[in-house]
Image (cartoon, rainbow, N blue to C red; front, side):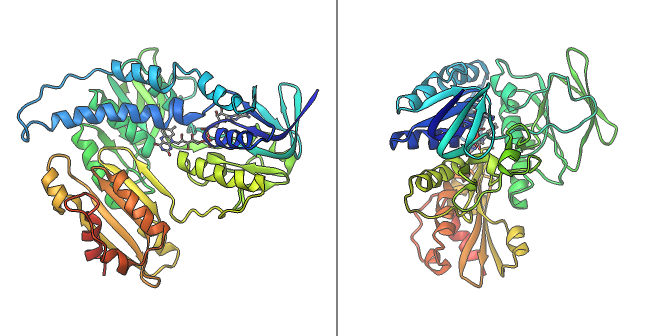
Length: 452
Ligand SMILES: Cc1cc2nc3c(=O)[nH]c(=O)nc-3n(C[C@H](O)[C@H](O)[C@H](O)COP(=O)(O)OP(=O)(O)OC[C@H]3O[C@@H](n4cnc5c(N)ncnc54)[C@H](O)[C@@H]3O)c2cc1C
């Protein structure tokens, strides 16, 4: 059996849903293929539920800061409202009817099942072949990478999914991986009272970000009672039906109720039939050009392209694909001002290159740093004010190529840095801008003063 459509989108996550919906809105006949939930990882097990948990955990932390600044607060935490909010408001109990209707109401056709490429312009789902007249778009996302640790397979370890489906906070939790997702969840559970350990192989948490930001987050997590083991690994895992015994590379061991594996995400091209369109099934991502084209009649969007696993990258790329398929003009993909936020408290916002990346790229680098507690707003803020603003400048061109804003509202301060990097605003103009007093973003002016 064969069915035809103008466009077939395989994977209706953040990126796929936007491409499919926009093209259906534009009047094309679009088939969206989804094996799980329309909407993808972000609304059901990613950004949204994790930020709901973090919002609640941050409220607890803020209430605990009342002592010494505004009297006394007695704080009793409960995970129940978090679990309920995730079920009722974020995921409607992991039901995607609203998202599915959002697509079909635009005229799109939703095919439920796992799609597989079967040659240029062709996708099979459960024995039916779908043929695309114009385009196939791959938006199949990522799954959690699971390290080959002795004894881990077959144990009831958590990934982000089980962690965000939890109805109770664990008594104790060991997190393997000190990246953004691992740290966000570690801190959230710790603030609800879980006894949390984080094990990170690199010599610092948040290894891709500036070392100054890692240091700020490290100190904050320790202040939350989290035991951090950097330059450390897990060599074996055992589950006895009740608890995990986790053996570290140094031979020591820990017994914990829950184990969260958070060592990164992986793209699985092996099951997508990409070899039928001339792509390498063992590649770590689908290689795309600046219009997100991956081959004949083929585009790819989101995490599967390997350009940073973020919702805003998926939606940015989706816009480019939609214009390209519709034959409209528009700028090609440009990742120089790629921004990202780790929603720990303090938040770490970052855009563009780190100092190390800029030096590696051969840029004539200058850096300027401001300590948030020494800025006017940081000093006023006092409790929970740790943070750093770091600017990475290209001295030759007189522009910023990167910036980091770790601290209270670090993700919002990032907005100004993103405009500066994206717009290639001359540093001299930034130096003569009026920065509202006393805001956190005014710390950028302090960092500019430190910039030689
Ligand atoms: C815990 C966590 C927190 C996060 N927080 C943030 C955040 O704060 N900010 C941010 O920007 N990003 C965050 N992310 C990342 C964000 O969720 C992803 O970048 C985003 O979901 C990527 O969208 P996507 O469309 O590429 O893939 P996905 O959203 O993963 O969607 C892919 C879809 O394809 C489907 N699929 C896969 N294979 C097939 C197939 N063969 N046939 C049919 N369907 C298929 C899947 O079922 C899925 O629905 C977070 C991720 C996690 C895990």
